[in-house]
Image 1 (cartoon, rainbow, N blue to C red):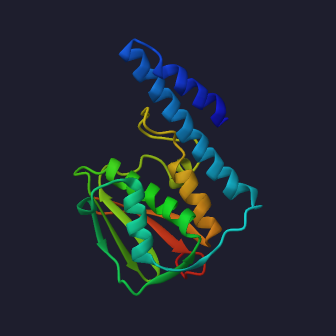
Image 2: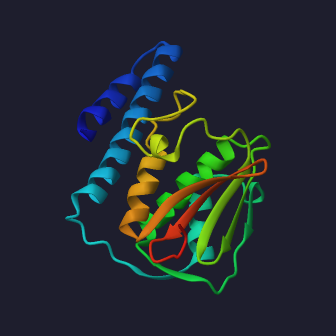
Image 3: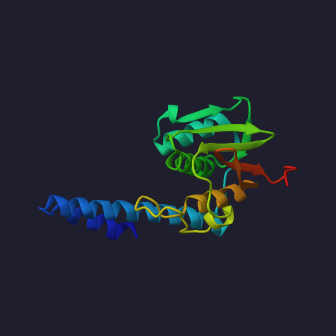
Length: 191
């Protein structure tokens, strides 16, 4: 799938019309991004991949996710004890955290969010509009509340799949004026 995209990008650079060239480059970038997300989904769903889980400090995973999300560190208020460790496939778990950070910032009134832990759970919070539907609606593929060309509606679907692979479930709570997406360990006593 990537070969025709690469060829298309080469041909697009030869266009003399700057506007058309920009459109084609944007199309090919979106196609590459979509292929990457589908590959990740297939990797998780197939169950054939051996995910190498090791113990990592949660703060290091969160920092890796902030880097991957390419957001400013001051947009993410972190209240994480540096001694907290989790067993995870680093690449996958960073991707899940990145998607939660992206969503929290994107749908926040002030383009900021907060992360903390409570009783083994990891909470991602922002101030913004409450969800209009149940969480189960948003973890379906290609589902998005605010259609935009910058999103495929796969973010929470990928988060949910990665969390399940790591024995977590995704939960949502509205706490006063805040949306809280919570990574809950399956072994938790939470109901």
